Length: 511
Image 1 (cartoon, rainbow, N blue to C red):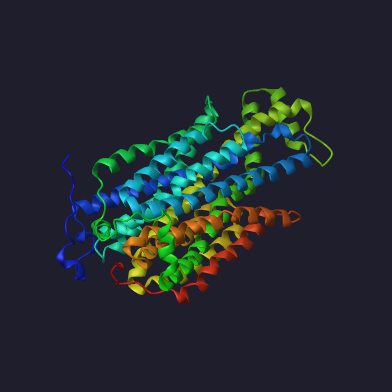
Image 2: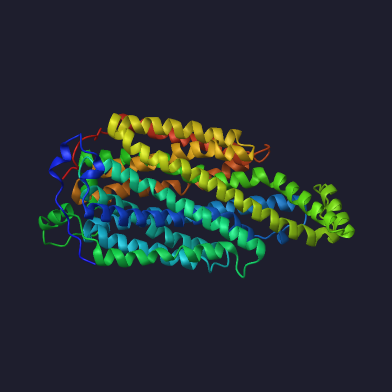
């Protein structure tokens, strides 16, 4: 394959009659595809974790640990706490990785750093499949998070610096929109493995999911051989002092300039709003669906099994199923010994159906997300970055409250959840477009990473807060609903940062 070279920006960059996509050369498209694949696989890993998390916790804390309904309820709380802990470790790794690799991207280059981060998150995603308990699982997720967090800042900095000015918001919006493909791919993998598990698999489906998540490492080979550093970064390197500087000197430069310091801190506040909202509320929607749907799915499985037993003339099994159907456990009674094996058999089928619903929920979120993320880029180019953020933050608040407050039926997954995905995930296109526009070339990766990934560090405490809220609402009918609706207030925090941030629509990237 011939080596790609950067083509100069077309002379009609400022001609509004020329569509943005006609401004892109072959190399522009190559950069966009490679960066999009890096972020797509990054999001695939994130979503594999979100979908696998309930099954992982059920394997680490099996039903055999509970012998009474009271213990079963306590076990459910323990699984939820463990899932929140794992999520917090993942987000903490994400934040620290972003801080480190954001600096590295400014020092050694965007392409080199992207290759390292993809190798890192691929390796430890694969190793997550060998986890035997909560704490080694948390370790692998933390190390995976280091790579996941680093990839975003260098990826968007690369695309922002390579693209023509007028095409930049559209390409960055498309970059984020394509992440929905990674999320949907994870949902389809989960769905396929759920179907296969009903037929019998040699390993737990979640272990296979994480092994599949190791495959993006192959993309690093393409990056190593074909991707070049942006010309803006190369020019900046030529003007640098030959003297070595401390590794984190970029942060000193970032915070010693009063304008850049203001951009970084207010950008962090804006980033925290969407990141905490997504990871502490939005991405727990599959967990909500499992809790809402379990009684109905159990009843459906029982009816199907009774019908099958009657059709085959198996009177003994029909009687046993009827006995199980009529059994009403209390705080002092347990499932009779003769029904224990039947319960395990039925629970396996119910969990399979719940996995399907989790996959459908993820697909619904990301169906909306694709249009929301690309739409943010188009709308922000028309009315400005700040007004678009204000609309998106308010929409994320109201749509998420609606999901956690109103969702009761299966059909609502295809109505309420896509709207929530559209609103919540549109914010992340905004971060990809806006954060690189706040910082000069020498600090672009560092500044973008600070706003986005320090937000992850703050967001790491979000699931812990959510867990505390669930315990606080333990006496209510739906603790997860009430906790989720309460946490939605975080989306409104970003509104307070917007008045003090600059409007960057139509302006070139600062040098």
